[in-house]
Image (tube, rainbow, N blue to C red; front, top):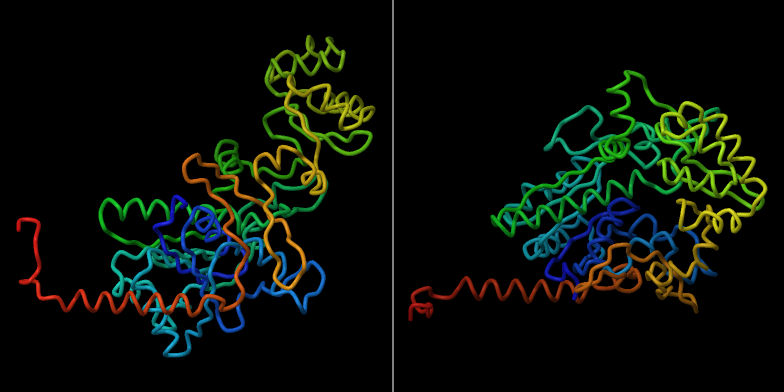
Length: 406
């Protein structure tokens, strides 16, 4: 039983941001029903595949962020399918969608309509530019993707080498960070409902989320009246805090406080640097000359030698690729790689585990991603039973009921 095993979530999302949000809820134990449009989520067919794309039900993209969910295929343009959806809404706790603003309203399935069916419903949307209900702007209705959000939100301007172009962060943080914030909003709304009985609308925009993500750039602009820009792997106010090329790769060193700096200078056998640059301000003012000293020292050592020399005294680590991550004992001890079935392939695949650890209700990926429409019968039969039960309860003569006072 997970911490959220009392919640049913109707997941109308697709691609990355929405599915990642509901994946977090599923890992925490929520019963997540993925309601897919005809043909299914757009990313079901995205690679990679283990072997044969024709035989396998979906690729790694879909598997990773839809694990542990149920699937039902519904066409909101069909009257019967809309009715089935509304029957599910009546018993749901949360609805999550990531359509453009106004899409659900086209089918008369917007928040106001669903709230009439279920006043305690928490309705959550993830959009590129938020929803008019929480702040109307002229950008709403425009399509958005991770690249758009990173560009507008300032992430790309401060990412990359100083003499290079603006660069997007590798993972889709415009999607993933927005999804995580949306999940937090949903859980806050669940807590509010537990106290008041009130449902509400939760709205998280990708542009807004990226602006929050670049909080350092925001305060730098406000304090200095100058727009910060790219500095490679260095930090604008701390040194050393950087990546250095070694004999066989790259390693990072974060020795910006006085104790770590002294330990780094000792490991380098350079007491003169410790004496000449004793304060953080000294080191920051002379960062270019010091960077050359550190770069020369790192270049003569392998990653293993550099990290082995500093480990335990100075924060340092190799820059790892995924092959190295898969070999890291820490990763396995923390259950951060999880095997799941790949339908259509005679093999399991591994996906990223959950970093949220809890002692009493540990989150975990709860099985593979669903086949399209795999759970239709189970879900609709449940809805029919619940509707019948509700109707029977409504027909009971209140004068015949036994009360606590009796």
